[in-house]
Amino acid sequence: MCQVSGCRTKMVFIAMLDSSKLFDGNKPSTNVDLFPWRLKTMSDKGQIGCECGSDSACCAALQEEPINHKTSEDLATGFKALGDPHRVAVLHLLTGAGEPVCVVDIERHLPLSQSTVSYHLKTLLKAGVIKREPRGKWSYYTVQPARLAELTDALERYTRRLTTTSA
Image 1 (cartoon, rainbow, N blue to C red):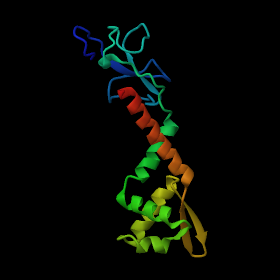
Image 2 (image 1 turned 90 degrees about the vertical axis):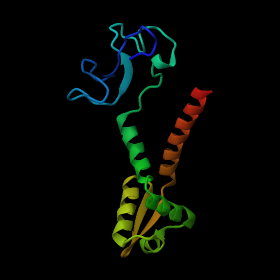
Image 3 (image 1 turned 120 degrees about the horizontal axis):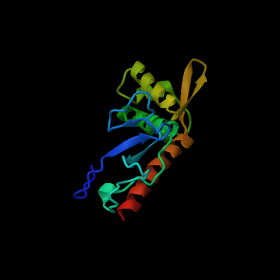
Image 4 (image 1 turned 90 degrees about the horizontal axis):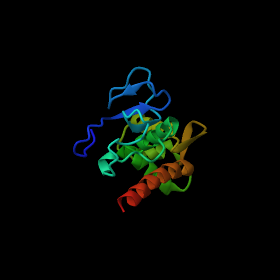
């Protein structure tokens, strides 16, 4: 509900791909893709925001275009891969090495079993954060700087938005 006194406009999400299917909060109707979405009112005028016309922050419409689904999933995969202390430790080891590091050397520096280290390396590999290079019976790992730059750039964009909107 709008927070302006006397305004009873209910805010809902409308799937932009099929605007005939409305959903309220966390309960989407069937077969509605949650991306892309935009905050709109139930106003039949097609206006974004609150029909009370208030400039209040509670009624401010989303100005930014929504992030596309593929991009959001890609970023989430990268951030999830870095969301574990052991994977951060692996990344720390690899960034400090300056050259490809053998899996055996990575295992020696972590208080984990070989299978657990392999699991963490696989997660980082799937997220594109590291690259594997097989050499004989061992694998050597390096960091993918371009992927780390993508994740860093996304965080920097979000931080800049926060500082410009709060200023």
